[in-house]
Amino acid sequence: MDLSHLDDYCIDTTQAEPDLLIELVEKTYSDMGYPNKLSGKTIGRTLKLLAKIAQPKRVLEIGMFTGYSALSIAEGMPSDGQLICCETNPRAIEFAQSFFDRSEHGKKIQVIFGPALETIKTLEGEFDFVFIDADKRNYLNYYEAVLPLVRSGGLIIIDNSLWQGRVLDPKENSDIAVNQVNRLIAQDIRVENVHLNVRDGLNIVVKH
Image 1: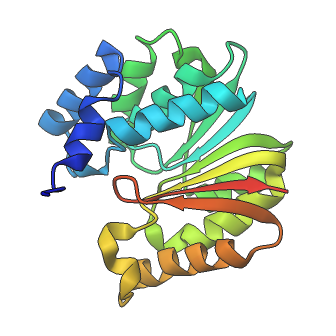
Image 2: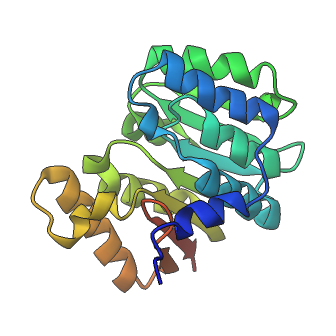
């Protein structure tokens, strides 16, 4: 049996994103470089569903790009929730904000420009949910930086955790960093996790 189209089948049988997110995807592909950095429908709907289940009041996203994942998470959050996004690309911020301004969930989102590791040092209080999807070389650093800020029972979601399969034979710095954080999490007594082979990998972590 040919299983090569199973990913497409899963996408087809997952409920559709809102029209605004579909427009965001189309405009990202037409107007922005590296559109493959988008999380995509399966990851986006997973993030929305996890947020809807967890009902996080305070969320941190590391690596926003054009705002697809931020709007997906915000969609599942309570109306009084706050989502802080860390992003270093001014053009991506301007692009994303134009969609946030048109979304009923955009009021939940605050964007902070600058390196995430520096931004994290300035943040106070606990987070219920963290989504990591920025430069892969710093994945281990991001994980260690945010873990103390996450409340007991809070979620850390790591995207691209399979890194296009390069974690199986890590050679570049980014490959090594993603593999290191995956290996650490699997042995980390501070958390429990499940590592899913969805799209480019999704490592779902719950803090004890």
